[in-house]
Image (cartoon, rainbow, N blue to C red):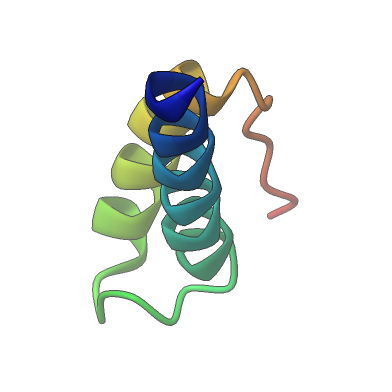
Length: 52
């Protein structure tokens, strides 16, 4: 149970970082935010799509 709670907390934190990448607020370079967001999307099982 403790491992499940730790994993849940980790995934929530990773999703928060991915969300910040989606708004472009984590890095100044938009392309870097997109690549980081795509990579984190694989871990959180959340699709990454940006409207141009």
